[in-house]
Length: 235
Image (cartoon, rainbow, N blue to C red; front, side):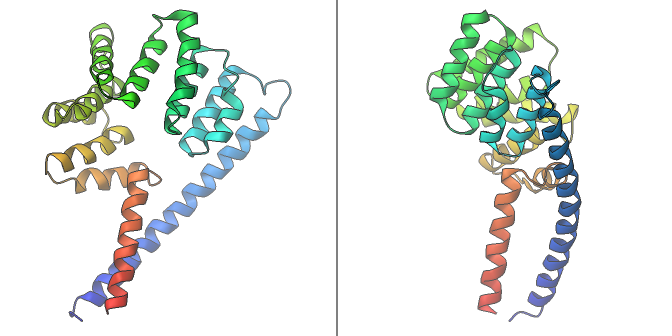
């Protein structure tokens, strides 16, 4: 066994312990928030409030508890709720259900900003020739509205799906300059950097601090744990 292998494992164990302790606190805070929102949703006086249902749906979507999210959003009623339904169904890889929600939005107001945004989301999920259409929607947004991270990431993802990674990187770096902790920007920069064969560790570290529950972080953690077990087995 190389002389530094044991030290490396000890360092990894210490890092894991610190990470676990931070996660325990985050988990307690998150569980407290979820209990509170469920109490409000159970209140007859306010439980059916569209804004409360929107908040609940957003929280449970980020928890990746999509069925729970849909309990509060699936009835729709506002453009915001229909748009969130589209987003949730795409997270579930159910573009067919997402398309049904989009049709409802189009019947209400085809030119509404949220209808156009949901169309772009669905276009990106469908892929193929639809990717260019999604890019044009985000480009139209950038000409009409103040440039936001939502628009920049939309343009970047469109570019990445079309293979234009350098252009995507420029949009993502602009977004990072606006908000260095934005999880979507950091995650997209990790992916973009890998395609450009550039170092991605800085963005991954920032993402870990900003959103320890992110899918990319969980994948990295699983890979490190598998590698750690393999090292111990060899040792």
